[in-house]
Length: 316
View 1: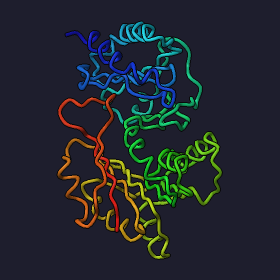
View 2 (view 1 turned 180 degrees about the vertical axis):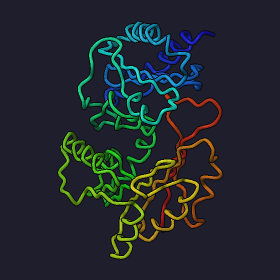
View 3 (view 1 turned 90 degrees about the horizontal axis):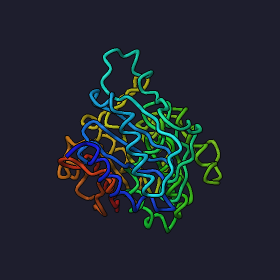
View 4 (view 1 turned 45 degrees about the horizontal axis):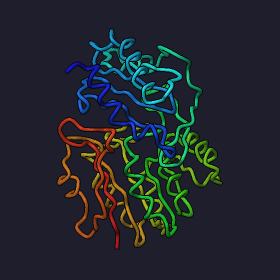
């Protein structure tokens, strides 16, 4: 079966998402999971972000773009623009940033930020610059599962908070207060902009530019406790000498999180296929009670096994 037939099949499988009103950002084609090796296609409110990981597909991108536009027209979606991001391997480190910038191959460029919607909250996304847009599409199902747990209110600590989407979703679904912790001041600025887009009041204390490990130590020392903690770390990161690796630091972080949770919940995630469900579960203390384990949503079909493990744990 050709890649073009597989693209068509994948898009028609997402027709129900195209009809939703609470979400307008999701994945249309998920690489090998949809039989399209090296190709990712994401939908953001009538814009398409085409990402090519296999250089052999680079010569096909115009044909792929036209093909997707025609299929989506049959689904009553008129595409405003298609952007291409070359994610194939770049040997020269100085050219990586340049190669990660999207180019418009048809239609018009989206605004920066483009306002996208997921789980009935909005976020400003950037389809042009950088490796990530500011909204992780694969967390849609996780956030949906979390919503009922926020109904009784409480206080959230959002570690590795990025653009604040977990906190905004929690606040919109019943939580009273959230603290977003991230080393990057630029992503915290974007988080604050997302608060404004969702009409959430905030002050500077809601955004803490700090190493997450140091924040946890500080919170424990000052007896600061939370009803919820979101621990959604990168698989690996390096920032001004503060490194994080799932394999090296996961257990250490869990031991630091436990003292700041008062009869509450902790969402922990791992985003790698190299760690199985059983291995993920075994990383957690025996007295933590697993409420649910979620993987990537249906628009992220996996080729062999799911990479996302997102578990909600009850602390007593």
